[in-house]
Image (cartoon, rainbow, N blue to C red; front, side, top):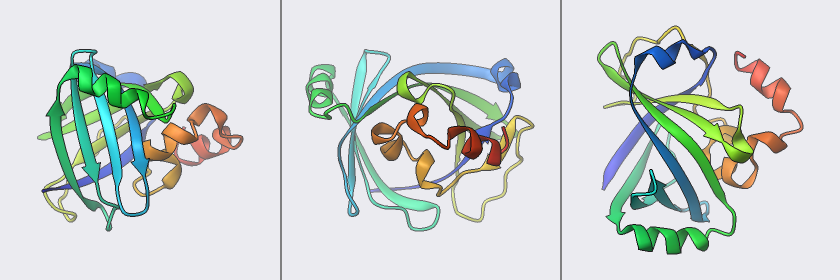
Length: 167
Protein backbone atom coordinates (compact mmCIF):
# COMPACT_ATOMS: atom_id res chain seq x y z
CA UNK A 1 0.00 0.00 0.00
CA UNK A 2 1.35 3.43 -0.93
CA UNK A 3 1.88 6.24 1.55
CA UNK A 4 0.51 9.63 0.53
CA UNK A 5 2.30 12.71 1.88
CA UNK A 6 0.73 16.00 0.83
CA UNK A 7 0.39 19.63 1.80
CA UNK A 8 -2.49 21.92 0.81
CA UNK A 9 -2.77 25.66 0.34
CA UNK A 10 -5.41 28.20 -0.62
CA UNK A 11 -4.82 29.75 -4.07
CA UNK A 12 -4.89 33.54 -3.87
CA UNK A 13 -4.77 34.68 -7.51
CA UNK A 14 -5.38 33.27 -10.99
CA UNK A 15 -1.82 33.67 -12.34
CA UNK A 16 -1.36 29.88 -11.95
CA UNK A 17 -3.55 29.39 -15.03
CA UNK A 18 -0.65 30.46 -17.29
CA UNK A 19 1.32 27.35 -16.28
CA UNK A 20 -1.34 24.62 -16.61
CA UNK A 21 -0.16 21.63 -18.63
CA UNK A 22 -3.09 19.27 -18.04
CA UNK A 23 -6.70 19.54 -16.79
CA UNK A 24 -9.30 16.91 -15.89
CA UNK A 25 -12.87 17.11 -14.64
CA UNK A 26 -13.36 14.96 -11.53
CA UNK A 27 -16.53 13.86 -9.84
CA UNK A 28 -15.93 11.94 -6.65
CA UNK A 29 -18.13 10.51 -3.94
CA UNK A 30 -17.62 8.84 -0.62
CA UNK A 31 -19.07 5.43 0.14
CA UNK A 32 -17.83 5.71 3.72
CA UNK A 33 -15.85 8.22 5.68
CA UNK A 34 -15.19 6.98 9.15
CA UNK A 35 -12.50 7.38 11.74
CA UNK A 36 -10.74 4.21 10.54
CA UNK A 37 -11.01 4.56 6.75
CA UNK A 38 -12.55 6.49 3.86
CA UNK A 39 -13.64 4.81 0.63
CA UNK A 40 -13.90 7.02 -2.44
CA UNK A 41 -15.10 6.46 -6.00
CA UNK A 42 -13.81 8.89 -8.59
CA UNK A 43 -14.91 9.42 -12.20
CA UNK A 44 -12.44 11.32 -14.37
CA UNK A 45 -13.58 13.15 -17.53
CA UNK A 46 -16.58 10.79 -17.73
CA UNK A 47 -14.22 8.21 -19.23
CA UNK A 48 -12.46 6.36 -16.40
CA UNK A 49 -12.99 5.49 -12.75
CA UNK A 50 -11.02 4.57 -9.64
CA UNK A 51 -11.82 3.20 -6.21
CA UNK A 52 -9.62 4.49 -3.39
CA UNK A 53 -9.25 3.49 0.26
CA UNK A 54 -7.43 5.89 2.59
CA UNK A 55 -6.47 5.64 6.24
CA UNK A 56 -6.72 8.62 8.59
CA UNK A 57 -3.80 11.04 8.47
CA UNK A 58 -0.86 10.76 10.80
CA UNK A 59 0.86 14.11 10.47
CA UNK A 60 1.11 14.77 6.73
CA UNK A 61 1.02 11.04 5.84
CA UNK A 62 -1.56 8.34 5.35
CA UNK A 63 -1.91 4.97 3.64
CA UNK A 64 -3.65 4.99 0.28
CA UNK A 65 -4.80 2.14 -1.95
CA UNK A 66 -6.16 3.04 -5.39
CA UNK A 67 -7.48 0.69 -8.05
CA UNK A 68 -8.77 1.41 -11.55
CA UNK A 69 -12.30 0.11 -12.09
CA UNK A 70 -14.48 0.12 -15.16
CA UNK A 71 -16.55 3.25 -15.78
CA UNK A 72 -19.85 1.40 -15.40
CA UNK A 73 -18.81 0.12 -11.95
CA UNK A 74 -17.74 3.65 -11.00
CA UNK A 75 -21.10 5.09 -12.05
CA UNK A 76 -22.97 2.42 -10.08
CA UNK A 77 -20.86 3.06 -6.98
CA UNK A 78 -21.35 6.82 -7.37
CA UNK A 79 -25.10 6.28 -7.04
CA UNK A 80 -24.48 4.71 -3.61
CA UNK A 81 -22.79 7.86 -2.31
CA UNK A 82 -26.14 9.47 -1.37
CA UNK A 83 -25.13 12.92 -2.56
CA UNK A 84 -21.84 12.92 -0.63
CA UNK A 85 -20.01 14.08 -3.74
CA UNK A 86 -17.79 16.87 -4.98
CA UNK A 87 -17.01 18.20 -8.46
CA UNK A 88 -13.80 19.89 -9.42
CA UNK A 89 -11.47 20.55 -12.29
CA UNK A 90 -7.97 19.45 -11.41
CA UNK A 91 -5.21 21.33 -13.16
CA UNK A 92 -1.61 20.13 -13.14
CA UNK A 93 1.34 22.52 -13.03
CA UNK A 94 5.08 21.92 -12.99
CA UNK A 95 6.72 24.45 -10.70
CA UNK A 96 10.38 24.49 -9.63
CA UNK A 97 10.78 20.74 -10.10
CA UNK A 98 7.53 19.74 -8.40
CA UNK A 99 4.07 18.87 -9.68
CA UNK A 100 1.27 20.94 -8.18
CA UNK A 101 -2.41 20.04 -8.50
CA UNK A 102 -4.86 22.92 -8.42
CA UNK A 103 -8.43 21.91 -7.56
CA UNK A 104 -10.94 24.45 -8.85
CA UNK A 105 -14.19 23.35 -7.23
CA UNK A 106 -17.61 23.59 -8.86
CA UNK A 107 -21.16 22.94 -7.77
CA UNK A 108 -21.77 23.25 -4.05
CA UNK A 109 -18.09 24.07 -3.46
CA UNK A 110 -17.87 26.81 -6.12
CA UNK A 111 -15.48 29.59 -5.14
CA UNK A 112 -12.91 27.35 -3.51
CA UNK A 113 -9.52 26.89 -5.19
CA UNK A 114 -6.93 24.73 -3.46
CA UNK A 115 -3.37 23.73 -4.43
CA UNK A 116 -1.68 20.57 -3.22
CA UNK A 117 1.76 19.09 -3.57
CA UNK A 118 2.72 15.47 -2.91
CA UNK A 119 6.08 14.97 -1.25
CA UNK A 120 8.53 12.08 -0.86
CA UNK A 121 8.84 12.70 2.90
CA UNK A 122 7.36 15.07 5.46
CA UNK A 123 10.56 17.13 5.73
CA UNK A 124 11.01 17.65 1.98
CA UNK A 125 11.62 21.28 1.02
CA UNK A 126 9.92 22.93 -1.95
CA UNK A 127 9.64 26.38 -3.46
CA UNK A 128 6.26 28.01 -2.96
CA UNK A 129 4.71 29.56 -6.07
CA UNK A 130 3.59 33.22 -5.87
CA UNK A 131 -0.09 32.26 -6.28
CA UNK A 132 -0.19 30.34 -2.97
CA UNK A 133 -1.87 31.70 0.12
CA UNK A 134 -1.92 30.26 3.61
CA UNK A 135 -1.40 26.57 4.22
CA UNK A 136 -4.56 24.61 5.04
CA UNK A 137 -3.02 21.15 5.54
CA UNK A 138 -4.92 19.45 8.33
CA UNK A 139 -7.75 22.01 8.57
CA UNK A 140 -10.86 19.77 8.55
CA UNK A 141 -13.12 22.20 6.66
CA UNK A 142 -10.98 21.80 3.54
CA UNK A 143 -10.77 18.01 3.40
CA UNK A 144 -12.59 16.59 0.38
CA UNK A 145 -14.41 14.09 2.60
CA UNK A 146 -15.92 16.96 4.58
CA UNK A 147 -16.53 19.18 1.54
CA UNK A 148 -18.76 16.36 0.25
CA UNK A 149 -21.07 16.59 3.28
CA UNK A 150 -20.56 20.25 4.24
CA UNK A 151 -19.91 22.14 1.00
CA UNK A 152 -18.08 25.46 0.90
CA UNK A 153 -21.21 27.29 -0.28
CA UNK A 154 -23.03 26.33 2.94
CA UNK A 155 -20.42 27.60 5.39
CA UNK A 156 -21.98 30.48 7.31
CA UNK A 157 -18.44 31.54 8.16
CA UNK A 158 -17.29 31.10 4.53
CA UNK A 159 -16.05 34.67 4.09
CA UNK A 160 -14.25 34.80 7.45
CA UNK A 161 -12.51 31.47 6.94
CA UNK A 162 -11.53 32.22 3.37
CA UNK A 163 -10.17 35.67 4.31
CA UNK A 164 -8.31 34.21 7.30
CA UNK A 165 -6.31 31.90 5.04
CA UNK A 166 -5.23 34.57 2.61
CA UNK A 167 -8.01 35.65 0.26
